[in-house]
Length: 291
Image (tube, rainbow, N blue to C red; front, side):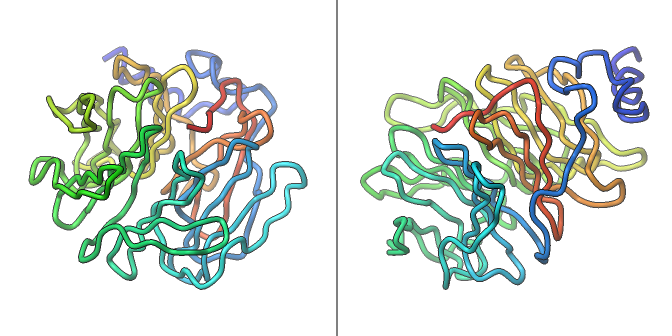
């Protein structure tokens, strides 16, 4: 009961009064600020080493957009790539993307050159390890996929995760975490030396909206000390490396959605969320990092 009341209090209290465990993350006086607007359905947040933020507009966008860390300006970075949902920059400097509209996973050079990795998949989100392993979710089929650096493709898990959605790696890249959009858990697998996944099981339990059986877990990221940030219907839920819920950061718009989360800014200390037609950011006490 204590834990339940504690989390509810974090959601209900004004920002200035959120001084329990969220004080480790939030800065008093800092709130969500609109960083980019004028889109239909923002998604696919990822960052580069300089702290620039990249994102997509799944419904109406033309390609990959860039929010410049130095100037705060937004521009279309790569054109002619509509319908991308998941996005990540790999160790080779290329974008890796779930090209949902075309049902394929692709790699894209910074000049826009496209390499097709997998076709015929209803891919949603992905993450790329430092070793070049690509892991992605296929929500409708309840599958988690794995692509090796030499382009071999396998289904790593099937039928257990309820509508797998957001996906991220632990800070040491020893664990893969996947959020359930249709359930309440974030699953985790141990990553073996060859990139394969073992010991998959529910690891974190997301807080549920009153009267609902699903948390609507979506985009996920990890900060430099290993804590997980997961977008849900209630807001951005934070979990410590042991999988314990630390608190929930409220959404920028109370009745809106947050579907993707990431860090950016020159010091990687701005937490960004994709929230419908806009991107919002807020300066925080923790920092993300570029893999």
